Amino acid sequence: MASEILINVRPNETRVAVLENKLLVDLLIEPTRRKGLAGSIFRGRVLRVLPGMQAAFVDIGLERAAFLYVGDVREDASGTDAFFVEDEETHQSLDNDTAPNDEPSEGQPASSASGSSHQMTGPQIQDLLKEGQMILVQVAKDPLGTKGARITTHVSLPGRYVVYMPTVTHLGISRRIESEKERERLREIVEKYRPSKGGFIVRTACEGASEEEIKADIRYLSLLYQEISRGYEKRKGAGLVHNELDVELRALRDLLNEDVDRVVIDDAHAFRKISKFVSQFLPKLKSRVEHYQKNSPLFDQYEIDLEVSRSIGRKVWLKSGGYIIIDEAEALVVVDVNTGRFVGKKDLEDTILKTNLEAVKEIAHQLRIRNCGGIIIVDFIDMEKETNKEKVLQTLRDELKKDRAKTSVSSMSALGLVEMTRKRTRPSLVRVMCNPCSYCDGKGYIKSKATISNEIFKEIERLASSKQFASTVVHCHPEIADWIYDEESEMLEYLEKKLSIRAIFKVEPNYHIEQYEIYKG
Image 1 (tube, rainbow, N blue to C red):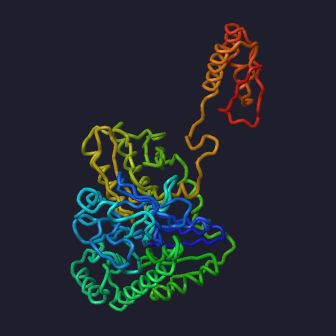
Image 2 (cartoon, helix red, strand yellow; image 1 turned 135 degrees about the vertical axis):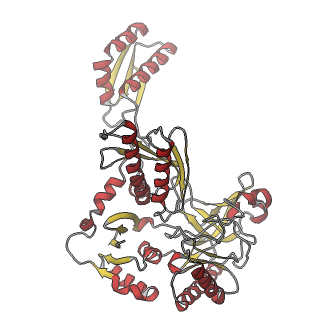
């Protein structure tokens, strides 16, 4: 499969597009003023310990306090040399095929799924942390919405071939390395060169790597952690100790391999920086790095911006004439499948099946580009035959195997709903590129003119029933005043006659359409 990585660098933002057979399959956007924090390491100060939530709020030098759950706290968290078995995967890179060990449950040790076992049987948060305590933490999830960053004391440092985890002791190997012989070879190499403290995850990119390459990666990460430890000790207050790589270098570290035909960069400075990085860590692939120097924008050559515009829209059309609706909320993402203009050729069941199958591929594609995470509910068009339901479900699972982010799909309900989860590694495309509507305050709707008019009438009636006066003055948006005079004149006349008052409307062009104020005349 032909694969390319395009890197568009501008003073205000950097964009990385990953293409497979000229089709956009992943997009990373990092605004210069709002760089992602996931993977960065901080010296934090515990602000509040909440036994009732088994969590703590930690000041790491950002606008909002970070959130630390008990399952993410190691014993003797204030030091940098304490070790015990971790409960959660903490590695936050683009390569989500790594797991802390090679037990059957991918992505986490078999001993625990979420760290909740700590709350039941392990140490309590009040026994591990005290207010005012300084601790070394790593950002596991960027701040999202009103939530602060989620942090962990389990530091993980991703390299090209391995992930170094100084606070654990086990060795894991990516499940995508299927050859048992290769797994054993890699295990022996890592065991041979691993430092006295810490554990490792062998990444997918390590498959076929030489002993010297793996050794160099381990040594680099060991030295990096030593530098981080010294930085932590030197810093007096809360703040940054180690910054994660820029988005373009992270992308190459995690995505560049033999399957990538070329890396194209449209900025001279970034080209030099990336060439140096690739020469140091991936010298075999240096020839694939190209400097794009044409006048026309790089992304225009592949219609990337057109695809991005399509991927921040709510409705996505399918080639058949059907469409899907994608609604992203803070807690979950909902996808609705519709036949639209597609009428089929045979019978209704066949039309529905074809629409659902076409939708499955687009849904998997959109989830990757939009980077939707958390709980995802897909409402497929209802199908009668169980074989068709299973075919759609299996196709969805097959398409999601192409996704680097870890996904889990449940069975289809009787209502045609499929519940799934996708690991959230960074803010979604919509959250990066868009803000909630300032006019509707993010609700997605505003009250109708009829509703606002009725509210005004009820308020006038309420006000007039408690006070004696001859008139009221209503300050409101011009469209509401026009609506009342044009469409609600009968109601206005009824109210004035019933209450023996006169209602005067004064238009306020700067008012929000839902805003109004009523005063005694």
